[in-house]
Image (tube, rainbow, N blue to C red):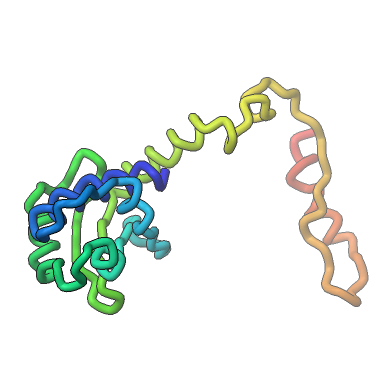
Length: 166
């Protein structure tokens, strides 16, 4: 999941870096993509960001990168929304970074496709992919506090959901 978005961000940034700086060296997506971080804010659109400090570190001259606002403007001029799901590109001032906002539906779809196609994450022999007969299992999820006696109400809440359909 993250590699898809990191590589797409690197593919967007590298042409702008080459255009705005006098750096003629080889900028590889594998290097630039390692700088991308995920902003995990619940209730908001997924955001990935890349600190501008990290971008200036890969350039031979530290002051070689143009004005950050102009850099973001050039990134936005490449077109929004994109096929990769980027719906906005902004500049964050507090840690100076470029923030890529991703459509949450595209983000979720790519995550799910990545999880389902990755054999290491999801074992194909898992019971989720087989027809397994349902079993009656008691899981006690409602334990009393330490020092409190175990009452019938605790036991009843633990088995109520499993045996209600008998």
